[in-house]
Image (tube, rainbow, N blue to C red):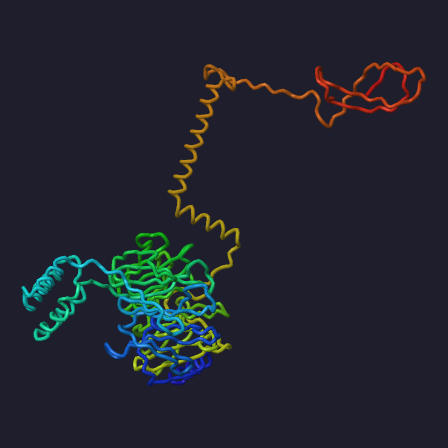
Length: 541
């Protein structure tokens, strides 16, 4: 067993280069809070990390260059997501950094604060507002306020505000100071951001302008304009969104895949007021990654599922430990897309569909993963650990991945797609389209048929009213067709004999011009030239 494990470790070490490991880097982050971006337009990519800190303190936005800390900014609330995006076409094309924290999105340009977006306030419970107004006028004491708020919380349809929820968690000796501090402040119910991603605006280029897509604790999805930060689209969900994956362009067509707290995954499309497809799972979703047209979902039951973009399950893989985090590995030079899965057993697995490509052993439990260009290296894997460590590995250019099917079922070769001819693929796509849209196509056909019959009936009535065509008076009499054939058909020779009179008595040769005209017309129908000695007599043309 030891020799086989040693050989497997040697095989994995031949694929990855250990670039850096700092066990005391002090980073406490998630995969959604790490972004790689060329912040200064010099071709050298930096790492932007939203550090969760320790408890409710020391939350910061940190920027790393190589292995050293470049800058840091304090955050007022715990970060839930960090993304880098281009918000305009201005030169130089340097991306901005958006940090979702509480009900705010903090936008940084050139590592300096640039803009703050605040989520719109929600409706306040009328009974809750009335109770706080009574406390403001000192008509009730803090204990009575607590009892009334607990009764409202158990029965009201509109949830309580953050102020009331915090008040209900206090000890009795802390209630007086809390009420005196906040009773004069207007009551507001503010939601918070739970997840965030980016969506291309109108182009699929890598340097295209992007919109921000955010999910909130109130169960809504917002799509924000990248320049004015106005709300372009607002969609309500059955539950609170926790994970997001977005692809497409906002102005053309896009899909938003959302994992919610109720254990379901919803798929939204452009101009849809409600989810287009729904995937119901038996466990909570802990990871969500889109690979080409498939959706890879990790659950709390130590399983990895593959679904189509219409919600059909394709495969399932059982993992050796619980999933801690997931991320996408995209090797652009080889056109490889795979899923990185950080496990609780100190391993990171790399899957392509249901096939295991690589296993990376780590000295601590990995809590976040990010793969992309860092510094000037294209294929860099960045990992942070539970103990605050930072691990950086580089994928070697000579690395070769062998697919190992770890699930029971058909062999790998059966999942290889055949090279289908274009005509066959076109026929299959057309057949699927007709099958999916049979009702709509039949309705269009019936509408066109009724329109054709209506136009024919109108033309028939118009002909009857104007007497344009002869029509039999009774339907029992047969129709009679008269065909007129021309007397002279082009391309055939017709012999014609006629008498001519010679106007000259010299008997010389000349050219005779023959014209055939219709009676009453001056335009000749036939002309002929005849060269022959002229004399009175019969001429054949």
